[in-house]
Length: 94
Image 1: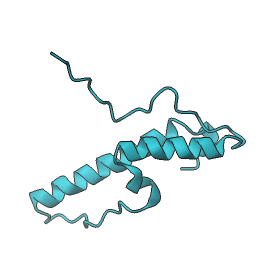
Image 2: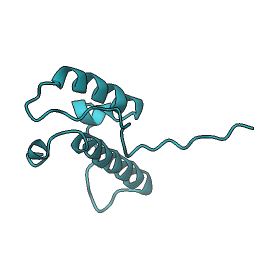
Image 3: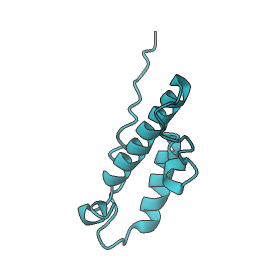
Image 4: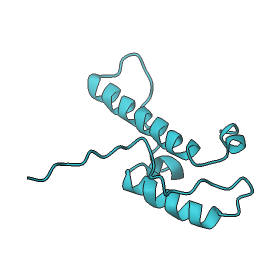
């Protein structure tokens, strides 16, 4: 019987390159990073397609609260994935 391998969404594979401080590896970094984040279904948080359309109001219902919480979690996760692979000096600009 095959055992399911758990998929972690909060890290990238070790072979994912870190962006060089001078940006010399931008082309391959960009390609691999986008591919990895697309596989995690979070690319919309990088390119601006996954915008938060829900207002943060005290009278929102449970479905809206849940949807907003999910969006915020995914937004934070997308940022986390990015800062793992960029230079510290660039991360501080975020």
